[in-house]
Length: 483
Image (cartoon, rainbow, N blue to C red; front, side, top):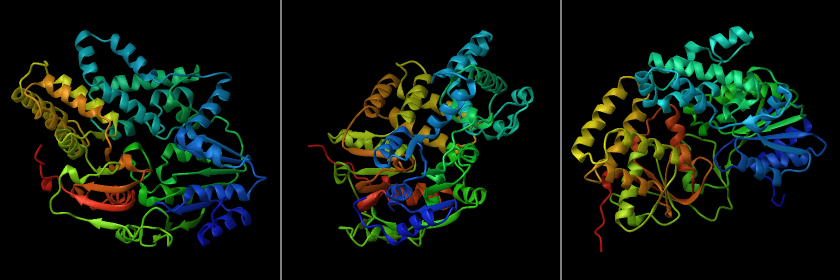
C-alpha cells in the first residue's frame, strides 16, 4: 500500500505474522481499519484468507483491494454455499418466501380471522425474520429433528417488539415451521442463509485465517456461525463504542464476548484519520484514548447556534437525529423554502404510508383523521414493548396529517416528501453509521438518553463529520420568510 503505517498498525501486523494468536482489533471511528486488514493480508501472502463483510457492496470493494490469496464474501453468501452443499444441490432464493407462506396460512382461516391477520401482517413477517436472526427453532421442529437451537418458542414470544395475539402467535409459529421444511427442500430466503447452515451444522470450507469486520455488530447467531467457520485462526476488527444495533440482535457487549469465546489478544487502532482535533476532543468522554491524525488539514469546529433556519443547512451536509419525526419537520421546511430534502430510509416511509391508509377513507377530514390516529395509538400502546418507537411513529404521522385538510391529501404530501431527492441529507443516527460528510448537524440531541446504546449513538453521530459539527434544536428553528 502507498502510505506509511502507524506504529499501531505495525504492531498489529507483527502480531499477525509473528504469533498464531486470535486477534481482536479495537478500531475507533475513522482509524483506518480497512487498510489495516489489507496490511495483514499482504503480510501473509501464503495463507489462505477468508474476509467476511456484512453486505455485498463492502465485499465487492474488498475483492478489489485484497491480494489474490484472499476470498472476500458476505456471511450470507458463505452460508448459502454451505447450505447448498448440505442439501446436495442448487438452492432457490426467494425473498417473498415467508410472505407466501403467511398468505397461504391466512387463506385457510375464517373470514373474520383473515381480516384480523391482514391487519397486522407486517408485525407477523417482522417477527418471523427476527426469529431467524436470533437462531430460533420451534419446539416442535427441535423435537422432531432432535436439534439444538439458540432460541425456543417461549424466549421468542417474550422477545418480540409487540405482544402477539393468539392468532398472530399461531401464524408466526406455523410460518417458521413450514419455512424450515422448505429450506430442507432447497427453498430459502436471506434469513435462512444464516440460520440453516449454523443451526443444522452444515460444513463450512476451511481457511487458515478468517478476517471479520464490524465485530461489534455480530449477533448470537453470527457468533455461533463464526465458531464453525474460524476453526484455525480469527482476526476481528470493530469498535464497541459504535455498537448501536441491539434492535437488530447485535450483542450488547459483542466484542467482549467474542474476545472471551475465541481467547483473543486485543490490540488498538486509536488514531482517527477522519475526525479533526476538535471533534476528537469532543468525543473523548466515550473514547478517552482516541487521538487525531497530525496531518489532518482541518482543526474542526463545534457550534451551537441559538437560532437557525433551513437556509443554514448547506448542500451535501447531513442532518442526523435519534428519531424520525424531527427530520420530517425539517424536510417540510426545506420544501416550503424551495429546496428538496434527501430522506434516507424507505422502510420507515413505507410503514408510515401503510398506517395512514388504514385510518379510513381518503376524503376523511383532518380532525377525524387525528381522532382515528389517536385511537390507533391507544390500541397499539396496549401491546407494544417499544413505546418510544411507537411514539416516534405517531409523531411522524401527526406531522403529515397536519399538512393537509384531508387524509388523502396528507398521504399525497407524505409520498412527495418521501420520494424527494435533494442535496440536504436527513437520516437517523443508526443509518449514518459507515458514512461521513464535511458538515454534520445533530438535531435534537436531548432525544438521546445518557445510558445504554444511546451513548454509542451519540459517539457515532459526532464522528461522521470531516470538519464542522453543529447542534441544532427543533424548538429553535425559525421559519424563513418566502420571497
